[in-house]
Length: 610
Image (cartoon, rainbow, N blue to C red; front, top):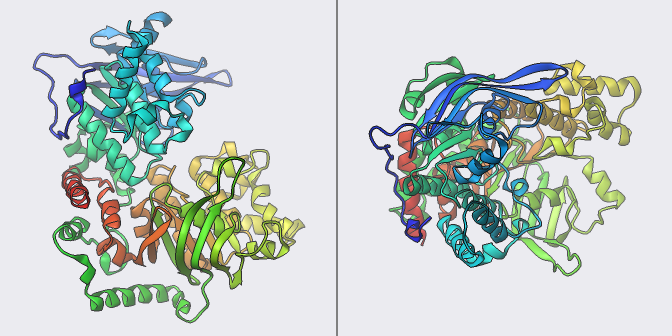
């Protein structure tokens, strides 16, 4: 690693030197796991190669064998696994290496960027210590030289303050900063091959765009081969050169990015691309609007003088759409959720002073309306959602839920408990919000039983009705959460939130951890239930394509303040605030050519904001 690697962006595709063999070659690779005295296949007869400076994207849904096959390359699978076939790294076999030799390959020749840096980094050591440890394990250098090299690496991954990051523990960094720190550790020994396992899944669109820019630049500077494991086709279009599509442990299609996106041959590939939500596909007159054209115009024109007649016309169109499913009553009914100049604080804990997360928030949701609350991590989205169900106290202002001001209620008060019966909440991670010791039927029925709404045969009938509504078989009532897939668990979470027939639903990032096809089915289910039951919804997310599908109105948050709000068309088609424009420009498109134009546009917006 040399200091002159830090430089500007270079989007050119790197072509390996003529006559140079592939960095990684996989031949007839199969992976099995021993389950109940049987060998269950996770990957079968995989064949692919990656050249220097090339990015191969392995895509597919959860359970398709992407991660299992990639972790098998380095012997990172558990002891109940069996791997057959051949893996060649620069022409030398890897699977036959003894443990000591394999440890030398890990980190030195091959590095892995894991999906969740918080679990991959050691929480009891500083970031700098962990990078220095990696450097000194593979290189004979002094502690001071290792420290200087670690600081250069942290600067290389574009952390704003390398010295501060070096001294920080993982929990003291944001999600994007932790991911950058882990990339720095992975690059510390100049690996010939980099395996990136879902490196941007849990990140905001703006942080994701920065990480993708970083990986693109590093690929060009280091000429490393990269295996990108992901289910996000927008990320693939932004970064990859070639694609291998996996389904049920097998590669069903391979080709260049242009071939796969332009003319997919396999029906599964076509279904995977069709399931990707993207801006411009929402209903109303905003259909197929050229978002990039609107953003490009924003870089050259002053948006403060938006045509008021045009905005009024769009508002009437949205109201007409609401009227189609009986939601026009919001024009005369009282709001289900209303925030007036609300400030929310996290209370003081020990030596940690109170932190004001939201300031001066004004927001109203009417019956049958879906409001999308968007912004980056730390902007205050989830804080507002938690306050709406009484989990956080209101420091200033008025917060009314179903006509009752809860800003002065204590968390254990009977008045707040009565209000909560009208509010349902769908959490981001259903696996952690469902009781692992209860069958899902009991989890769904528990709120109704505790509220005295139903018991006995009536309760069982209500549970079966809810399972029907979320399109799960009634037989699943006796299954435990670990026996369900991620999408099925999320359906259980929605059923439980609907159990008391709430007037307000708070959905906190309910689809962020799901595959695109599962996400599409869950969103369609959510839309159908919202139309059928008519509840108001506060949908918290950082995915603008999702709110384009669901929301009637959108509120954009930045650093604890609502910086812009309006109808879906106003926010997504005619954004006025520069921050909203940058959010829109950071959303990756599942189209290589359009994504390249979007990336250039984002660079112009960032330059103009600077």
